[in-house]
Length: 254
Image (cartoon, rainbow, N blue to C red; front, top):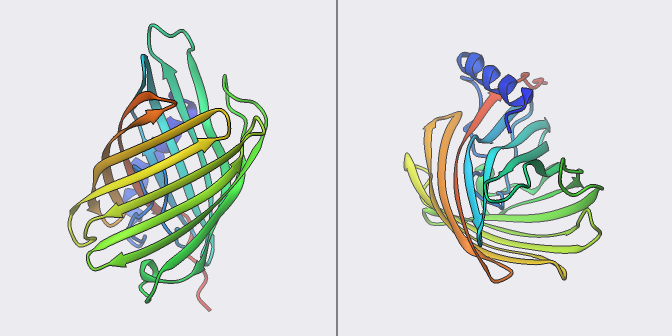
């Protein structure tokens, strides 16, 4: 589903590349369900974009186009997050186009650690509201997530644990472990083990294998294949996208 917003963002990225030289490396985590204990710098926007993906659950096939997450550094150690995902059901389904997984969140650093070039674990939290979908679930929900990131030699691991009250007032629990290869490799292998359970409705367990290519300091491409099961139905998903960091304003220096 290519909305006017998608075209606007694409044009903005194209013309802004020449001014992104002072931005921090684009480290927002695609192609995972979880995240890391880091945030965008003050005044920096990180765009996580999947222009095209494919999901198969049992006999159902869904085109994901696009999936987008915006991360804006609003204060030292804090970022605002806005996300949403367009889905188109493929034949023989007639469900059509919908907007799902919409939400608005705040993410903050509780403890500076290895991801902030300091010793020990980096610890962060993310919390916010689940927004109504389009041709999908109505109503609002809420979620909270805790994140711990640590580096074991060349390998970086991110532990995620969270809970949510869904738009339909069901409880949901999410657990994820992300493993990344060495950061000094231009292309680093990555993996994620995730478990997502909505009480009495859905249980999803999955494993993702993929890679992240740090093309430039402010541009990273990613690819992943996710395999799992949802309520005893097979699940396969192909993910590919880009993370792009660009400055919106320079933080004040006292």
